[in-house]
Amino acid sequence: MATRSRFSDGDPGVADVPDGVGVIVGDRNRLEASAREFGELRPNVVVDAIAFTEEQAKGLGRAFNGIAKRIVVLSSGDVYRANDLLFRRITGPLDPTPLRESSPLRDRLYPYRGTPVPPVEGFSWDDYDKVVVERAVMSNDQTVLILSDMEGLKDREIAETLDVTVEAAKVRLHRARARLRKILDSECTFYHDPRNTLLCDLKG
Image 1 (cartoon, helix red, strand yellow):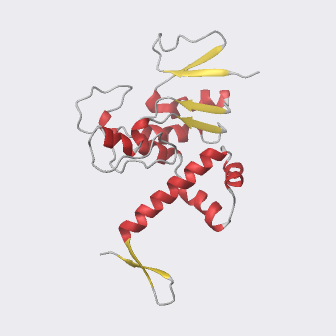
Image 2 (cartoon, helix red, strand yellow):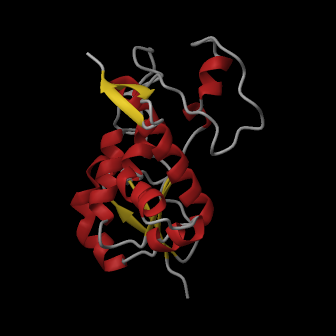
Image 3 (cartoon, rainbow, N blue to C red):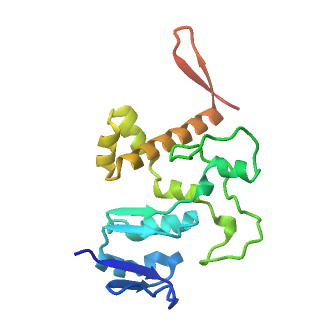
């Protein structure tokens, strides 16, 4: 029988859960302080509905490393470039809709920095960014790139190796390649030599 528990900051309203659901009370911004309770619970899956900042995402990983088999973090529609286009923060052609996991992410980080929004959940909106959160949760780009491009594993094999869904493996690979491409474009000038070998001269 599955055991369900909810993490709460102690607010009685937040902790009002159905019968049979346990509650662990602690500080969302100090998850490691509740490591003993998490270890006793040993959840198969952890779903984080907050994780608004990089530090919250990293704290989540540290708290459940070696305890939970899988961590799920809720993302947001504002990770996409289309969101910046919608609110006219940038200009350019519209991205195809409906948006998909492989749709372009926005390049501009910390979208609400400098916006006069009251802090919530113990964090400042200056530090909010779901793009950064996703990077922290799916931090090991090197692994997925090696599995695909060097070891030649297929999407399903990568998913099995990483213990994620096939769709999640595809998203990780797509975004890892996009980040690598951006780094290379910023650091290198590419060209082909007479033998048509692709070469790179470092910029600057």
